[in-house]
Length: 373
Ligand code: COA
Image (cartoon, rainbow, N blue to C red; front, top):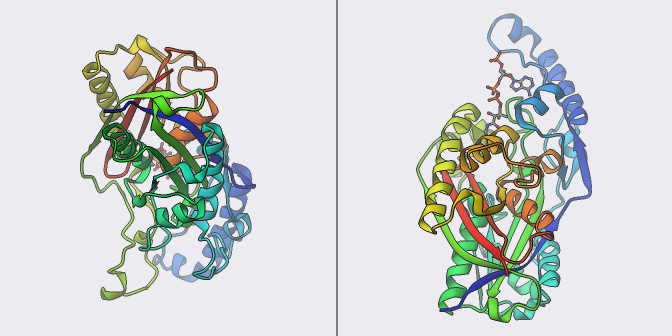
């Protein structure tokens, strides 16, 4: 058995920012257009008028101040309200591969590695651009990596589930150097016309390199243990799937073909699930809350993270113990905890222990206990 270690991480941040004010301005313009177009039906009580959104609500309810997106124009166009991506030929890299490569190259550079050193690529994220061939295999080719690659989707928990799969394979010796990459084009699955959720997501890509600790070229984090759990829930759901065309309404536009959630229920049910999960994982590993220097949590909602931090530590987390990035990036699905880890881990000292935790649809929760070597 080998000891797996995270030896590098990287983040691709899209060039376009949308602030809450910009988002709300375009959303409200869309609402005004919609209400004007449906004025008669609304007056007759046949259609419900849509309500304006507000920046104050968004910040208060979520802690989000802005988000990055791959295409700003399409999202903010009140007559469109979703991104505009060009059609790519089958012979050029897909959009997910393009953003994944940026994050992979940064993670490999941090690890002192090149693509040819990699013998496992896991593309772990919430949405795949196509059914097959796997995005991971396209990334494997673009990296010049050997071995094999596969896609996995555990929604917002994909990164930690991917780290568990890679760390287990490194531990057993079936691979030597893995890259787990999370290209999240969440702007494609978000319903930007729904006031309840239009502010939630942002685009990004993250990657981590996992290899044998003995092979590490520089600073690294030992992966002591991982723990994944799932429990079925319909409270976060997206019904878009390959059987769509065959059903009675075929390809007709339907709300459930995009991200949907019952946010209140998710909040209430997932917070205790995650806190109990972390507590059990730590206890099994013989570790106490005071052993933790830092937690890098999934980035969905500031109050959610505050609750989890308080439950795990038994007190309010101190500055730097639980860094949030959601104010800048919004919810980036599987990538959130890895952005936090990548941006806030350089100051960890030898022997410092931390925990990466992601959670979300499924429900699903994954945690990774690491130590700076
Ligand atoms: N602007 C202004 N008002 C809004 C609004 C908007 N954009 N969206 C909703 N509201 C209104 C609602 O209509 C409601 O009004 P009412 O009280 O008169 O009925 C009120 O604000 C509260 O809405 P609610 O949806 O209950 O808000 P919330 O406090 O639960 O916050 C979330 C919403 C989504 C931010 C929150 O539930 C959340 O983050 N949940 C966790 C979800 C999550 O993490 N999901 C991702 C998967 S990991």
